[in-house]
Amino acid sequence: MHEFSIAVNIVDIAIEHAEKANARRVNEVELEIGELSGVVYEAMETAMEAAIKGTLLDGAEIKIIRIAGRGRCNDCGRAFELANLFDPCPWCGTFNPEVMAGKELRIKSINVD
Ligand SMILES: [Zn+2]
Image 1 (cartoon, rainbow, N blue to C red):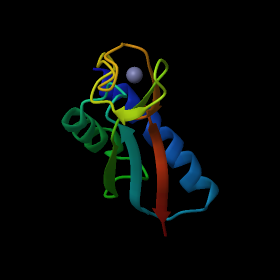
Image 2: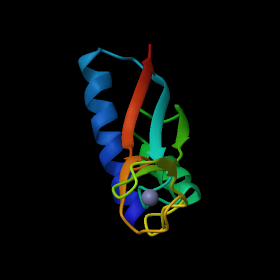
Image 3: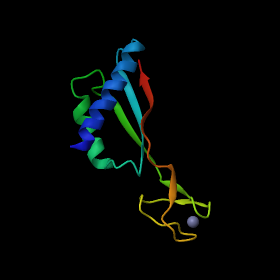
Image 4: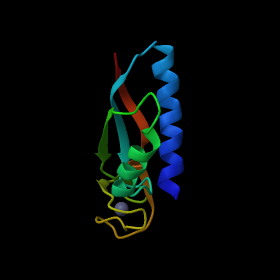
């Protein structure tokens, strides 16, 4: 399962940061995940719950912030909302977008005690 290996990776990184900060517990982890990242949100939430069990992150609130996809057309130069990577430009109809946002897959913040 794709999401589970990503979750394990995120948990590893979060633990590393929490340990560096001498955290006793982790209250909250905020993740930014783009709608074009290929991650299924529901699967990611389940995977995170499973991945934090028995770790320093156990009991922490996991917040997933969705980042909408945005593209800019390489032909006409206009920006538009990009719901998926294979959408055409709504202005000129070509399939040549540059992805500006939506591929994020990162930890935004970690709140520790
Ligand atoms: Zn265009």
